[in-house]
Image (cartoon, rainbow, N blue to C red):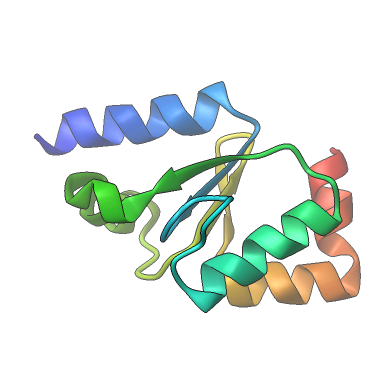
Length: 103
């Protein structure tokens, strides 16, 4: 089962340049941290895909193991974990996020 979950996660993060695993979706975030990360990405005019972890508990748990990151949201860029809301916010404020997402 775990291998199938990891394969699905890898498929999602390799088929899309920017993926946000979050509570809710882009139109209706279900927590403040997810809403903040969505707002940052929208402000930067970044095209991104979301995955609502509240709709799939297997992916939700599998992602914690896959990334070794316990919290959500989780932002992936070109297959690699960028971080959660705190890191995204810090990177945005320093300008690092803009540079990372341009590469």
